Image 1 (cartoon, helix red, strand yellow):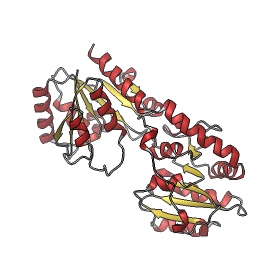
Image 2 (tube, one colour):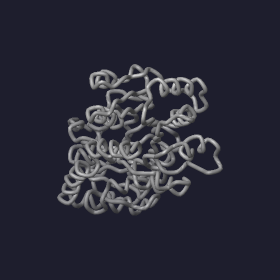
Image 3 (cartoon, helix red, strand yellow):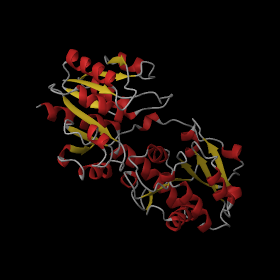
Image 4 (cartoon, one colour):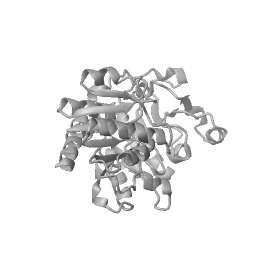
Length: 360
């Protein structure tokens, strides 16, 4: 079996990419793998050591005739069984390149929403009938797309798995933010976007008991926006809300917190920030949107609250603050859940099964 993957490693720093680890696992399982991505990927040495051919190229535009030609030439020369596409630029170019070729096309979908039958570009990507299978990162993503595809049974879930051994960060010293020892710190790792629910978290501070030593740490880009500053200034906890901004040590910061929050209002996939918090035994509160609610078992590894419900969010955080023994147990169970149900071993095995079933 031979597979060509097309993805982008442009945003890869020194972080672990489950997608790249899956490709390495497939190569070790005997799949002849090639990947088309940026040549300076930090994964290139490991991939080449595993026998994976790295093609230094990535589509740059949604409508990229040059990319279509490059991919088609690679498919004709390589005689691949599987073409696996991981972003919209790759999908739009890849499905055109695969026309009339005997290659099975797989696309990846990582979040709910933002796909419409009336959008012509969606018919060039996830709604394109040339795509033989769509791999959704969570059941919520799968169900969302099944409503739109003409062949809903061809949309399948394969969780993007992780490995506990990837996470070795030492919890950070939060005193740099003026957070005192003994504080109950609620960490939120997300870039400031309307759908990430940072405003809902700030609203929740109005409903938290002011006598408790609760602090909020906001980690992510664009936290300096005037709108957010005004919301923080209006909070009764304004002196206990700390902005870290974008940080490369986000894992170490969240590992030092007593609770983690992702208050998204819509369009989530399988949030890596939630997985990271659970791996570091931090009980997590998420909203019931996308795959976040598939990660967290309500009342066992954290809490799941309705999107936009600041009161329910505050109530969950208050419980974790006031019940440290139960909160610690939730943290332990969260780590165990990631290892058992969202591990890279299953991702590799299920991807291999998918490929084998497609080419039989």
